[in-house]
Length: 68
Image 1: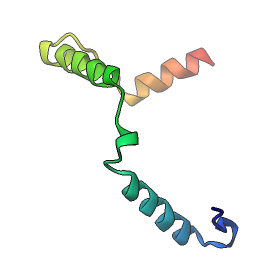
Image 2 (image 1 turned 60 degrees about the vertical axis):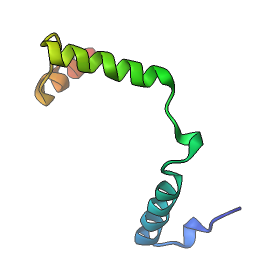
Image 3 (image 1 turned 120 degrees about the vertical axis):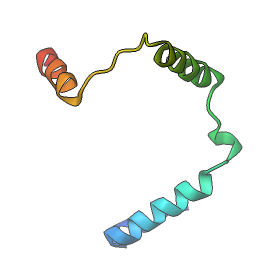
């Protein structure tokens, strides 16, 4: 199926994308791998125990600038 996106306005394209995302929610093919849940659980444990560290946006930008 081909959708004539080149003839659509930005609003029509955004509406079409929203409809596609909505139609995919809850789809069995959309389920996350088990390791994603395990990783999130481990990260939450680190946050809860106080072992997690966080960076401000400025700190992240500085680190990225130094790697370029």
